[in-house]
Structure formats: C-alpha cells, structure tokens
Length: 165
Image (cartoon, rainbow, N blue to C red; front, top):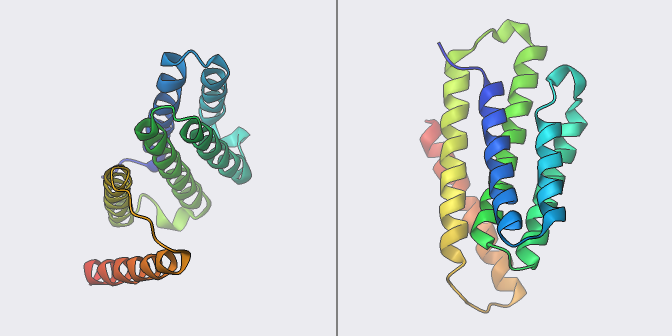
C-alpha cells in the first residue's frame, strides 16, 4: 500500500518554507521571514479551500521569494533548495488532485511509486547539479548556452526513455 501524495506535498512545502525562512531570519530580514511563513500558512490550508491556481501561485511566489534571496546574495544554496522543494510540493499537490478527481485510479500503488521515484530522482539530480554548478564560472556566448541546453534536454530525454523501458 502506497502513501497518498498529500503528506509528501505538505512535507515538501514545510521544507521549502524552512529553506526560505532560515536564511531570512538569520540575516534579520523580517519581511522575507514573514512572507515565507505566510506562504506556509496558505500551503497548509485544506485542499477543499484551495483551487489548483492557488498552488500554482504558491509555486510562483516561493520561487520569486527564492529569487529575491538569490539576487540579494542571501544563502544561495538554501534558496535553490527552497525553489526545488516548492516545485516538488506543487507537483505532489497536482498528483493528489488528479487522484482525487479520478476515483477509478483508486490508490494506484504502482503509479504512485513510479511518480515518487521519478520525482526524487529529478529533485536530487537537479539539486546536485545546481549546487555543483554554483562553483563553476565559465563565460559562454548565448548561442553556446542554447546549444548546451538543447543537448542536455536531449540527453535527459534519452535517459528517461531508457529508464522507462
């Protein structure tokens, strides 16, 4: 029996808020701390009071607050982690909504396990790459960045297809 996505979504939202709140609090930026705690309160609202657009707005707000922290040079590792965890919380909330709207899926243990594994893989790989690439300073022209991004997307697509088979 698989655990439904709602507790994982709340845990990811709580972790995202902690990653946002701690650096703001340690730097004495109380408005950032207040904004992150306000976002947590909205994340914790029961699903019957939240619409799908609210969770999307929470994702955008969390990523925006993390971007403000990054641009202010406030603990970039914490801010990157906060944005990634907010994305995971949003994804899990959407999964919970889709399972709730389609009762024919039931508990769908295999679907949930596969989704959890792919989310953990993407989240872990993305965080490791983002935090590792913070230490590398390379100047490239825009066309090289676009070509490298296209190659990375192609490689990830190939990897994903190979793992799916």
